Image 1: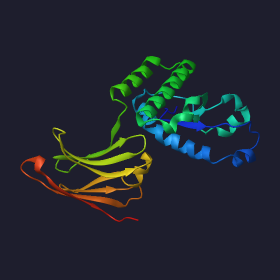
Image 2: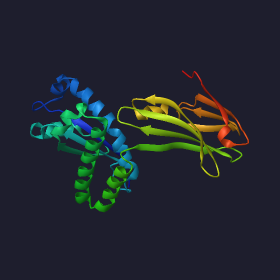
Image 3: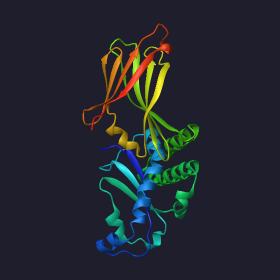
Image 4: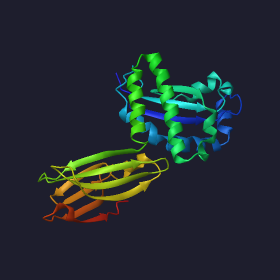
Length: 254
């Protein structure tokens, strides 16, 4: 039985009853752009919620797609079927407030995203007999983190077990920053940290780094999902770890 590993939000603006594919294709592309933007800007919270929620097993669904509709009374059953994403639990709910989403501050966007996700997850919990108390813990954890979505994506220790190289991500509403960190292996104390890149789409970071490879005790290669080296880190060890000197080179891999 698959485990739910993904939650996404979608914004569906319904202007009139839609009866066929041609009518859908002729609708304004502005809603498509709004939908893409809405999904990206809420992903910092949806991914954070997913990372902390308990294992929820379903018969075949691997994710949850919450379609936020501005006027659900105009959404007919035919269009619902057209919008359904395979292998996902598709939920259609009315949230008129999402129309104002582009004009909210980043903090307000995070708060609204958490509100929508948590309310709909509790509704699903009643339907599928999930533990609502565990979901409340997820919400409280996000509040405790002050809505900050920071995580270690990859980490690998040096051959001599003196250092740990980590790729970390700070996922915000409008962007995701990817960092390189070097820590002491034994104490995990941070020695140096540097931002590698900023991306509007968090998932594009896989294009840049999907593997960390130590070549020597003082040399690290950052390899992308096509097996190409994108960055090379070389450093000089010092008696005091905090004085470590390093050089990061960007490799032209395209």
